[in-house]
Image 1 (cartoon, helix red, strand yellow):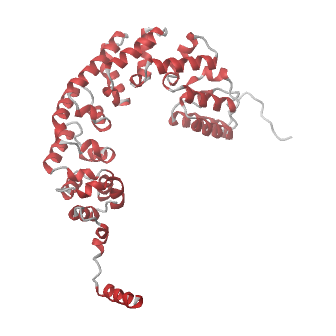
Image 2 (cartoon, rainbow, N blue to C red):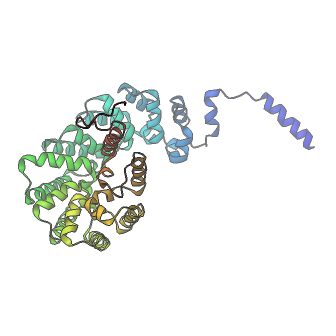
Image 3 (tube, rainbow, N blue to C red):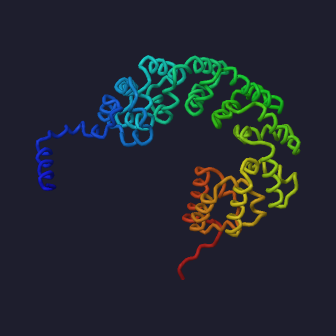
Length: 375
C-alpha cells in the first residue's frame, strides 16, 4: 500500500510543471504576502530573506510602490546594488506614495542640492528620508529656522539625517533649546562673533543635544560652577564636552568626581585641571574608569603619569593595549616615556607612531662627531 502511494506521488511530481526560476523565491509566500511587492524586490536583487526576518510585515502591505521608489533613487544616481541595500535595510520605503517621495526629495534638496550626495545620505539614514507626510510641515519649518541662524547647509543636512526627531517635532521646541545654548554661551563670556561657529560645531558633534530638556543644561552648568569652575573654564568645558553636557546629571558627575579624586589622590584644584584636559572624568561612570585605571597600572604605567596625561583615560583598554604593543616594537617604553604618544585620535597616534618609526630607521647625523675611518 505504501509502495503504491509513493509511486503515485512520484508520477504526480513528474507531471507538475517546474516554476520559472525568477518566481521560485515566491514559493515560500504566505497567503497574505503581496506577490507584486515580493517579485519587484526580487527583480531588484533585494535580500528577501533579510526582509522577511527583520521586517516581514512590510511584505503584507498594499498598496506598495517598489518600482517608483527604485526609479526615483536611480534617477538620483543610485546604482542597482545601492537601491537593493537601501530596500533591504528599510523596506518600509516601498510604502511611501510617489507624491510624498517627491515632496521629500524637494525638501532635502533645499539643503543638499547634489543628488549623488543625497543618495549617500539616504543609504546611511533611509528612515530619516522616508518619513510620514504628517512631518513634512514641521520639517519645512525647522529647515527654515536653522537657515535663519545662517547655519551651514551641511550641518542642517547632518541634523536631519542623524537626529530626524528634532525635525519632525514643532519648531518652537528647537528654538527654546537653541536659545538656551546661545544664552549659556554668552553668559560664560563667549564672543558674539564666534557664536555661530561655536553652535555649528556643537550641533554637528552631538545633534541629539536638541532633544534634551533645556533645564538639564542649566542644572549641569550650575553644578559645575559650584565645583569651582570659573566662567571661562565652563565655556571651555562646554565646548570640549561637545554637547554631551546634556547627557550628564549632577548625581552621576558627583559619583564620578569622588571616585576619580579618591583613586588619584589629588586635590579639587588638580582634579579641575585634569577635567579640562580630559572631560571623560566627568561623563564616564566610575566602573568604566576603574577598568581603565586598572588596565593602565597593570602595564607598569604609574599614577603620576596618568595624572600628567589624563586624556589617556578617554581611550578604551583595547585601544590603549594595542597602541602600547605597536610602540614597544620600536623600542618605546611607556613606563618611562610620556603618555602623550598614546593619546588622541587614530590619526594623532599614527602621526606620532610614524615619527618614532622614522627616528628608528634614520638615526640623527652629528656633523661634529669625528669620523671613524679604516686604519
